[in-house]
Length: 126
Image (cartoon, rainbow, N blue to C red; front, side, top):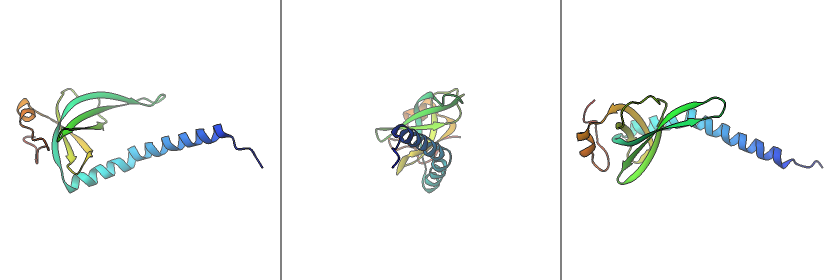
């Protein structure tokens, strides 16, 4: 009986997790986000933006955004890292706020001050 190389099994396991995670990010997550946003959409405002980079050889930058609904903070990402403003509207599903999407519509100070705790039912302006 052959001895199983533990190091090889660990490398294959880690590689598999990375590949599956990448496929989820590329294909499954956008489909689920679109599905949930079609069911019901509300709008929140970003509280903070930050750049995030992925990879070691091929560098891919994204913008990470944060928003709060009913006192709970959520995180999302978009591919545009050249965003200029600080506060944008985020479309999200109220039953599944982790499924969200950047709208690229800037929020005004009045929008921020008047935002309901559970988000706007519709955008106050475009």
